[in-house]
Picture 1: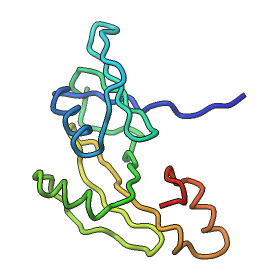
Picture 2 (picture 1 turned 30 degrees about the horizontal axis):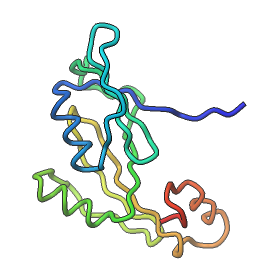
Picture 3 (picture 1 turned 45 degrees about the vertical axis):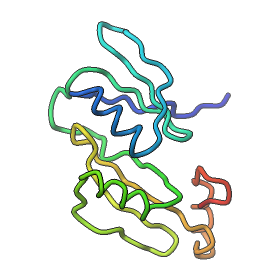
Picture 4 (picture 1 turned 90 degrees about the vertical axis):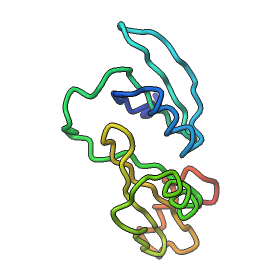
Length: 141
């Protein structure tokens, strides 16, 4: 038997604005736009991952056990530049650990995103080499 995480399910206080954000910033593709359980439900592909949006405002501002969603890119600086040009504020600059670069930013409805890039040729020896296996890009980058 094989199992995999299929999607993160998120509430959206303004579904159209949320969809636009994930389409413009990350090349999101709408896979299904359905009416289920009395509300609009939209499945969006972002690369190999999936997000499921429910057309209903978040029930509270708390995140429960969810800290952030990780979005891997092969051009972190380019993505940050694009997002800054679109008016998204970043509290910090990109953190660079040589083999792993990342920055945090808020998406609509206070969803915290970690934008990250793996640099496989800079992975240190030993256990760190296994980090290349988590990459969604061939070659790890």
